[in-house]
Length: 164
Image (tube, rainbow, N blue to C red; front, side):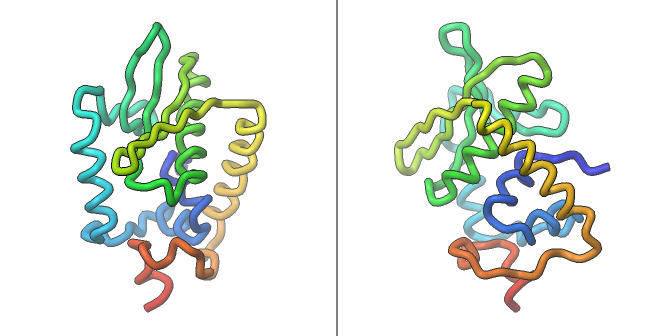
């Protein structure tokens, strides 16, 4: 059984077809320059923080403790995907809460010098539950959803699966 990951949450808000492709282990072009830039930014940023923490089915970019509170960080290369990134981070907070760990989140965009606070509100929890349900329905489909052009297609590492 496939576990819902933060990446699937992120993809849900970007492209439903990507959800299906990733869930069925059809991975994007790993040499895509935009993926490589993202990996480099994540590796080089916030060197003093504890990075890449895996907890069950989630992989957290970084975690720190300040004033007795855990802060979970998600590093992104730009704010272009702000809402998908916030929901991905909220999903990590949701999962941690299920483990009994209270935390807040920070969406970190080093290139833009932005730190955006993310908290797990009741509205966000309700949206995440709907999103998780919708992702499960997408994954169950025999074939991926048909491609639909969005503002994100031009930089997508999956574009060969849709537009070639």
